[in-house]
Length: 99
Image (cartoon, rainbow, N blue to C red):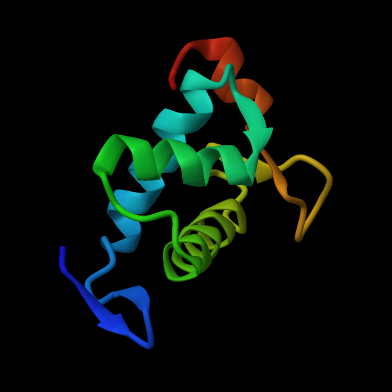
């Protein structure tokens, strides 16, 4: 994934697909014990992949999480409701060991 320089800032040209971000978010949540602040997930993804923890990546990551969490059958949910910055795996996912 390349970056280009624009006014002294690196801008991500190619962000990972939403499906890949969802997988990485799930990995990060499992690594954090099932729940954590979304900024920690961004840091996890950046350190795991070598991508810069940019605003573009964060925006795409949040969009991926929110799209997935809107489906009540998904393993993701915002801890304190829509727009929450604290994310978690749904209780049934952590209890059943399906994560």
